[in-house]
Length: 239
Image 1 (cartoon, rainbow, N blue to C red):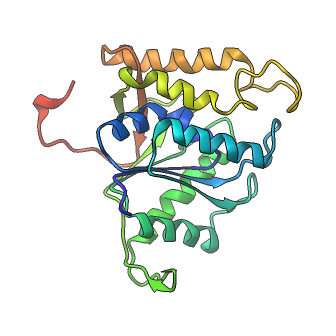
Image 2 (cartoon, rainbow, N blue to C red):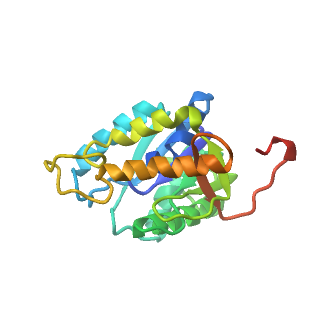
């Protein structure tokens, strides 16, 4: 399966929080969209790796993605080295996405910036034909996506591009709240209250989307950064 868009982020729920509206929009427009989580989020304060997996599957169902996979790297302890890079390279060469969105360049959670650097390095290496990988005993061809973008997560970073998700905010919110152990949690059965389980966190998330939307005069939007300058073919199509 060749994907149009792949959101490859470190924890289950990062994709929904940072790009849930973008995912829902392009699924609705007929694009093939996938999500790959690097870790199972097993170090999370609330819930378990198993409950996170169930919640991730439900969020994927809500968004209507073509696939969701987990690469099983160690939450909190993954490193940017050959073994981890090759795990990502195999996935990139398997699905050959046109666009990849990954974690923020720098953020409050140290996993986010490290994952962004890991994915960035792996995407470059994926385009080198002398790096050999296999999938189901078949040699994979070198491949590099044409565009990589990064989420804007907890730490505010000035976006390089802002996408209108006004018609898809409700789906984004539902996909986030599918993580019942993580967000808007009033009980303590799955652990103590955390920074993200407080209902105020969802209000903040909605406020961020409104702020991005205000900048392009729409109701809700998501912002992304780019490591390279972005070119356009038609100035008249810019908002």
